[in-house]
Length: 277
Image 1: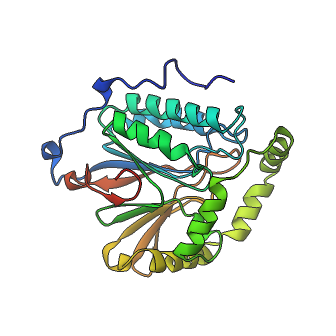
Image 2: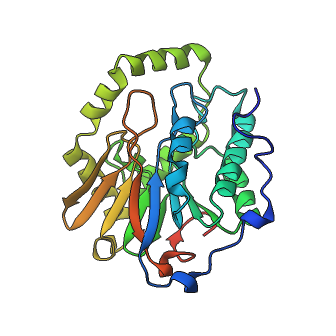
Image 3: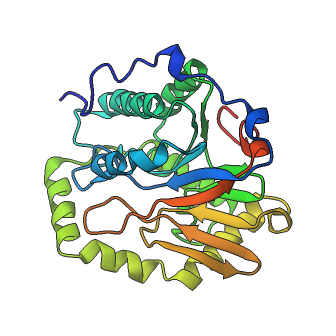
């Protein structure tokens, strides 16, 4: 099955890959955007259409954070992991070409942490200096981004590593299972399950428990935290001195909520995280 989208998406012309000069905009607030849970290439996903509709607003952005589960290897309708990875690379190439002045950060989630996909991302980062990927977290100034699968249950950093390791080797589900899942989405059953499993208070307790173990002194340094995974969007929720935001999901029947955040010149090209950072 061919990749969806425009032609020659895997080729990134060098003219799209210049790095914006920080000095031109130093210390002035600008636009950053964060999205998550597109679940591209899954039968249940409306991610490509929603991102296409969002693109006119993204063209003024200086930073875009793709905050996990951007690609769905487990539920992909493509022929296998290799084709899904190739089509994901092509999609990212088209996105970068559409946003020539934007720095793009990709934080992995459980559905796109597949073993071997990081090699595609690493190669893309070498080709385009505006693209960076991060395995678990990204920090820009006083703002923290992570996918949020640490809220699936109460997890230490070691628990999270084991959880991701299992997902990194996950097999692709078949057409029958995919169709059943899509029917559950249409009936509203999956949204009900998410609401029951991820009530806001319990979710934030799991999240802060994980961060207390994973990131030293994060409470002293972080003012805003953006995450996804739960498919339960909200914004501007203050909890124990940190303001939390969730960007929802592009799965059919769920709410997709891209969010803007303030960017300063010092944030562009300077960050803390893993991957090729």
